[in-house]
Image (cartoon, rainbow, N blue to C red):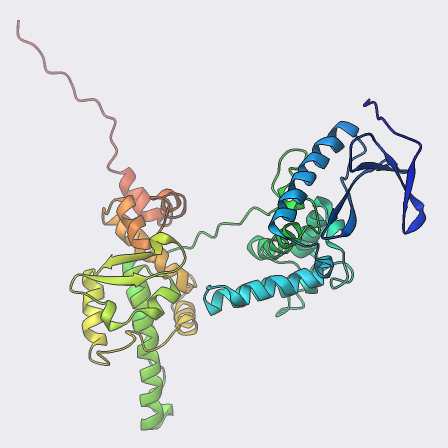
Length: 404
């Protein structure tokens, strides 16, 4: 056990029951309960911060780290921000940073949703909850509640969110606590503290493996999307309107499938981005998302068709085709697809056609050189895997006899 040098001198802080003993280390005190504290002054304000340990040797290390942080903050002119001690205040500070960032409006909206979900499902009063009491156990508790018991905002009869959604809320909390650390409200972000077995507090994502239709079935889907059922029910003007909507939805889905672009990337393409042999993709997700995608034969035919509608501005007439896409899938008794599944379709078709994985990875705008591509797309089409297996032979050719 550590030998703790102390003196009989004690200090009171607000309450007579809250007494601190000197330890012989400047600024390091032990409370009567046994927990060690750092005492420091910043901009004339004296503050006590728990070091969350009753072990003297550990307390000295944490105290030294905290002292260094305070000195750095003092030289930078940082102040202790009392207004940022609660989760409610930290959430508003994060929302303000998000609003002032250069992120897209859709990204900002997503962050606001993450914060709102965290606020709505917090155990207790979120607005007044102190950041200093948030521990790793607090984080795992909110994680468990969100994944198993939290009522969904849009589907209150269903309980619990998917791992990806839970992780989004946890990310909002982590960013809030980063602001608390930056403003000297807490010593360390509990997200950065390792657990007993160094397990992440985040949930493991469930990787969705979509069943990609064959080329023939995909063409059936696109054709069905452009079809108007029971046209005799409509007058000429109404029929023309519905047909235009159906054609635009089909063209939109084809564009995603023939380019491998993400939804927002495809919607942003203008005719100025369409060159003779490739399309410029002005992606924003990663550095590699700004790229060039080659114009494959079906895309060239689609572009020729789209030029009959407009030759300037945005290439696509609509920003989504999900409803029409999924209705057609259901009518044809095929796997129900999402917008992003059309990106999977493009990648799978390219790989099956023999395009090298690093090349396909570049076309998709991946930053890992193909690692994600290998994990995500290698088993999307069982039929291709079975056909490839037929090419493998291990038969031994009979040795030719030698004539003496």
